[in-house]
Each structure stands twice: as structure tokens, then as C-alpha cells.
Length: 451
Image 1: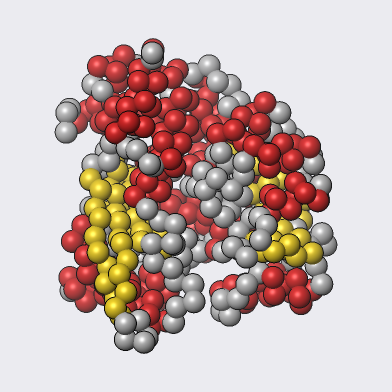
Image 2: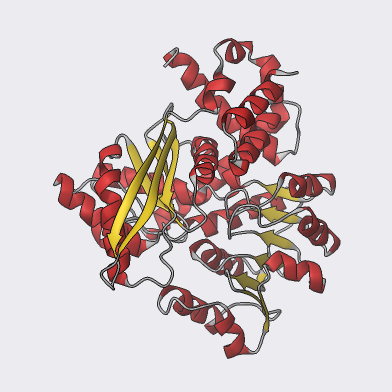
């Protein structure tokens, strides 16, 4: 067996019942095979073995009191995976599906994503199985304060800087930062995704969605194409999906789908203008369900199905797919349907939204494929820019941050293609992104010795 296959087998044996983590490790390590021969020093120093083990994994109890006065218990997690090139950096996810395996997969992916941004950030991730949906603001506040009562011991502006993720938006970041500030008596950049009035960065809410579209635009440009008049399928209805829709519209494309955990809507006229404004109000202010859009505008609505289910079953034409919901939302059958229905480009706004089998379908059919660690790095890139602004005690303009984001996404695209070509995988964005992200971290780990 090869070094890579030995490590994959070891991970599956030592970390049982964590399929998402196994999947992430296998996806990354198999593409790193070309680096083994070129860098025997990495093999000797056991860099491949070490990079799949987190520096530490923290699990803690989160007790809180609901509006009925009843005590509730949740689990909190923070996995600090690798800080070779900078402080641990990665979001906090509040969702019932959260478990240690999911947090480890997200933290592992974050190592390479953060490396690709060229900013000095290591990889980490955290969260809880708490579900903010259906909770009052006071319940969310009490949970966030209890969560921070433990988390504050493990984070700091030069140690670990969490951000938001699924279920953690401006409200949750505000409650957590307010409590952190109260406990430690410091106003420091220890969380990103903060409000503009108290240390946040312009473009941060938009960054992941914008970045995924910018990355897709760079891939399309290699074929002499752009977004103009392209039909775009977008999954999700949260922060990433919303701003992906906005940027697609700005670039002349037509976004036709959104979904949440209850339903998918398809508007073949395009989700734009007043319709887009309604989505923003519905999801961010009313905190309603996406099916309400279909009731208001008399569009197709399929309950209990994902965007990719609907595209497969209804045979809807799609030029570009932007999965922006959650992990493994596109399986092999969905990928085959996308290819059959004309899809030429997939740019991942979510983390690992495509299964390994789906990725193979893309690559076998010459679909331009932007893996999440490259395509959705815009969010953490602007989080890094927020950290820089906090350190400098200043704020940059919207135009300046957006321009920096665009340049970072262009740089990630270029680095991915260059690394792929250098290691015999020309045009393979997945291999290129993984190799480019890995080499920077591996060289830093080698320089530090055995630590």
C-alpha cells in the first residue's frame, strides 16, 4: 500500500463512526499522491500522518434555561486542527446535526481553505447541536452566553478566532461577543462576522456567496465564457445563497432556485428585483420559510425535496450550479442529472456539498468544478481582512474590501491551476487546490520540527 492509503486506513480505524471526516481526509489525501515522490522530506517527518490529527478537540456541556424556565442541555465543540501558519480560524455551526465527526471534517477542510487565501490563518471549527430555529431572541441569547462561558478559555485574537456558520449569524455573534467582552474585559478581534458598529467588516455577510460566484467566473473565463444569460441553480436560502443570487444577477445571470429544510422553489423568470428583496426580508427579518415565496409569486414549490432532487425529477435546464446549503447535498444521481441537463460549471458555496462519486461525474464529463475549500474561501478571506482591520484599529471602504476579495479569489484560482499543472494534474481544480493549500502548511510544519 502507498503512504497515502495507509494513512486513510489508519484514520478510518482510529476515528470510527465519523463518515464525513473520513470522506474529507480521503478526498484531500488522494489528490496529494503526486506530492509524495517530490517531497520525501514530508514522508520522513510524517507530515501526512500529523496533518490528519487535530492539535486538540474540546467537548463541553452547554446548559441554558428556556422561556418556560426549564433547563436544557446541549453539547459544545471546538476542534483546533492546525495553527502552523496562523491562529486557528473557522466558523461556529449551530444545528441539530452537529457532532464531533462533522466538526472535525469542517476543521480539516479549513486548514487548506485558509492556506489558499494567502492570509496567516490556521484551521479550526466549532459549534453545537443547539437549533436556533424556533427559539426566541432571549433563548438564543441565554444559550450563546452559556456557550461562551466555556469557549472563552480556548480562544483569543492571536490564538483562535471563531466566526459564524450555519445557524450562527449576526445575532448569535453579537450575543457571544458581548459576553466574551464582559468576561475578559477586553474589546479585541476575537470573533469575526461582527456588526459594522462594533468592529465588523463591510462585505463580510456577502463574502462567501460573492466569492463562490467570482471563482465560477474565473473558471468560466478559461473557456471564454461568462455569467451573461446563464441559468443558475442555487441551493440553500441563507446568507451564502442570498448573496450568490445577488452577485449572479449583477453579472447578468439568472438565478432560478432556492431551498430550505422544508421546500425548494423554482422561478424560471429569475429571483431578482423585488423578488430578491422579498427573499432578503423573508429569511433575515421575518425568519420565514422559502415556500412563502412560492405563495406570493405563484412559482413552482416542491416540499420535502432539495434543489438537486427537483432538477433531477423535473429535468430543469441548468448552466451553472452553486450548491450553498450543506455537506453531501449532491450525490452521484444528482451529478448525472446536472450533466444531462446541460451544466458546465459547479462552484461550491457550501463545505463538501458534493459526494466523492458526484465529483467523479463532474470530472469525467469535463464540468468545471470549483471545490469548496477554494470556491467558498471568500468568507474566511474577508474574516481575515476583518482581523486585519481590528488589529490596525481602522475600517476599509466597501469598495476596498470587495476589490481585495475579488483579487483573493483570482489568486486562489490561479494558485489552484498552477499547482495542478506543476504536479501533473493540469486543469484539475480539486487536486490543484488541495496541493496548493497543503504545501504551504506542510513546509511550515517541517520548519517547526516535531511539535
